Length: 382
Image (cartoon, rainbow, N blue to C red; front, side):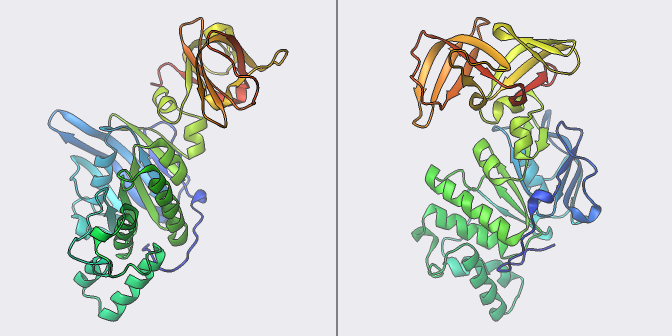
């Protein structure tokens, strides 16, 4: 499949499935062979004694917007660049549209990559930057002009055709870089933290642009980022990486509300992780928490998001209740964030949007949540 620049083709990416084997949180058996855009099998990369990426099996569906998310040094960029052909794998195989491209260079793969640094030719204007790759492919002038104009319209840069990169804002340069990649009609677009250098407001604007372009084109995007909010906002599938491995793969909702490991729970958004033990289908945790939680016996962590944890009014009850002493009070406008010290020595973050009288430092506060809003993770799943 190739991109059709300037042609609207809504694909509905939420009906697609991304699969991964040998990792927590993956989906298997959801895709026909014809639905797979990228297939990775046993892909790894070593640098001497250091393993940057451990063997990974990964299927990416056509129409997916897959975010590869993780902290610096987790192997996410190495994985992306192996798919793009910029780094040779130590072992494993890469297929694009059913064709083995493992031994092919970047220029021989039906993919294109957008880098954080844009990579625009400074001596060429916007029109020339966009048309350069098509010129190398020896397309005629009429075809080049037609595709350049459609690409410019796609990224909403009409009127900037003759501007030099130095005269464009960071966001405009990023749009040119996107258009230059898309104009080559790759089967897969790879994006290596392309928004990292932009300020917050501009980054949010470009996130909206990426969502719009993906909806318009219906292509397959693979996006590397260390920004959890960015991954949640953009992707229909997220692969969370740690130490060269995929910890969990799933929809943003699955990753956020049903983290499979301690790392995922702590890395995605904010989470309270309270130590506990599960016996006979019941968890006992900090500050006297006792609640039902089916599963095997053993040490666990009880996970509750601050926004699911509410301050209880006098007489109000919740399925899970505990109390602590207020250590911090932070005003965010729409809500107040409290940090409570529990008897166990652990801290609990609570988000209060009720508008009730603000608690003060040193006050004891009762809080609670419903069991449907919590997650119990075995201690072994770190």
